[in-house]
Image (tube, rainbow, N blue to C red; front, side, top):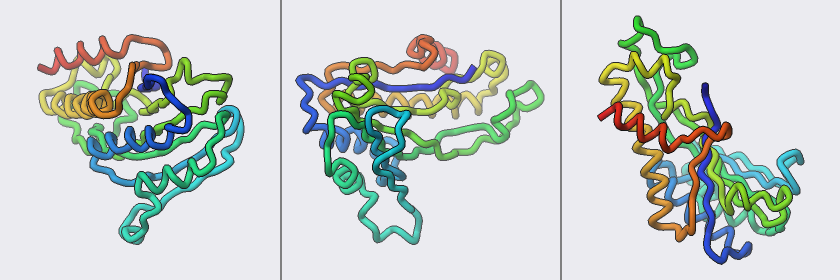
Length: 217
């Protein structure tokens, strides 16, 4: 069953006024791995996620907007965090392309081993939490949390795993390598004190990924 995938980050002796620079650092690592240099959207939530955003901006990142500098990481973060409040959460959306089978809404079957694969954009949300947001939820969520969405690009259903051909295994492995590259890049360059890759259900994702890589190699 598909599960929501997150990466939580904690920083040593973290000060709230350092949040904008810390967000920029994490977003830059994502840009390096994904090849996407611009922010797709930014939102600021007060109190908790049950409240409506007090700030929201969606950027148009196509050929018409190449001259605009507003969606560059540093500029988008500076605008959204212009007024820091310790009971707010600051969310930035970026995209990367992952391999998915055509018609991936349906399970892969024995008759579909020749399924064509394509790279599709997936939205990743990178959030920075104020210390009073959602009753100090950062203690569990991290000072910064990355929301990857559903884990299906990396962990397929059990019945799908048994019928993957060699080509399909290659694509899944490339998705896993991108996820690991992003995680390791943060660990190396962002000065974190700890990190946790986890799923909403609490199932041990790390063990799943290791088992998946062992199956593919």
